[in-house]
Length: 305
Image (tube, rainbow, N blue to C red; front, side):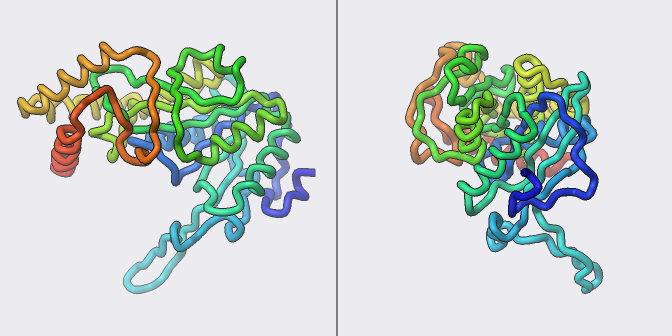
């Protein structure tokens, strides 16, 4: 049945027999502060030994004027084009759990058709659960552990995880669409979102990726070590400490962020309309200082080897 789906091009090698696989979704193009979700997915793909089993046809889903292929020019010769593809891969985590990974660009068009195709694949492969990964900027300090929030259509799933709950109106990504579609087919679904300090949201923030991997391990039993991300997080933390320590204004801002973070309740509610994909609102902090530290951070990192 799956091979009859019109927009999927299946690999010649058959799909291995999967035992209750977890479907992990990370599609680029929607909000991903600090590349937290992309970094986590890269680690999952690498450590699980993932291999592609199917690629979606490009033309029904991708607007290549918005996602132009990369042309490789060498001494004036057009040597190759690199295209982005929406890909399904299979892998196995460090504990031997089977994984089905949906990665690549978020579709620009035909969302309902794409949703139905993924729901069919998930049903046919007997997916046990779906987990989406995401990251968004927030007024939080880099000196505190990254907080996590959740979206899910299931009250049972929601009660089983300790992540922050929000009441918001916000434009949806494809992972949110798939949450509902798979939930309607009795497949438990949730998306885990990590908060990234707003002043580093435009640069890679590996601590956010580590937080997502740890959440996957604790609440879905998917085991990915992410050792390279952990090393990068230590290096990034040291760089930020150097930057902040060199400026009294930054020290004061960081202290204020820490106080607000430590005093804020675990439950945050608000209306995010008009806030995405920019900095999300926080508990009453002046945003200008964050923009200033972000600009200085970029200058600082450019000067590093």
